[in-house]
Image (cartoon, rainbow, N blue to C red):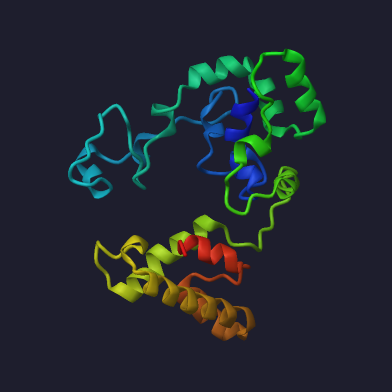
Amino acid sequence: MTALNYVNRQGLHHGLAATPFDYPHSSANSFFRKELGKPAPVKAMLLPTGLRHRYLSRNVTIPERYRMNSEGLLLREDIIDTSYVEQVYITPRNFLFQMNKSTDEKDVAEQRQEKSGTPVVTIDLIEQGTPDFDVRQMLVNEQGRVNKNRMTDMEMCRLIDEYYVPRMKGETSEATLYTCTDRERNSLYETIAQDIQRTRYANKNDQRTLIGRAGLSGKYVGESQLRRCLAI
């Protein structure tokens, strides 16, 4: 259960959401749907089987039982063993408690009392190896105080993929960050960093132009974050 807690609360620990359920890609949204008032995916959100090729390479096939939404993402409900996870949590009430409780010494002590012979599951154990890992910051993030003025990695990566790369390489299906050379990525870094600075210090009229053109909303973007999203 403790290991599942960390998986379901990744968005929270990394400062991407105020609760596990607020992170759109969290598996937490797949469990106890009926009891928590979460509707099942509607047919209108699903991508017709004949259009799947838009998101798959030619030599990849996926069984039809795995549904795909309009953004090309496979539905979690078709992949996750929801019945097993719900059995682990037993009740929706306990599930909500586990999603909202704080990680502390009491949590560690309870695991040790079980004497299962397995290592105590902690953030340090699960998140070790993560770039810029800082357990102290993760515990702060766990309180759900999300900085709304900070651009998320997902927002920044989408901006790079949908605006900056096509502007550099042209509007082609092959124009992705992963077709960019190291030199091109460094050039993108300089361009985006300049746009961020211009947006930050521009007057209101110029700011509207920049926001409309590049999607920069004046949110804070750190140097390490930009390098991470550009894979440099």
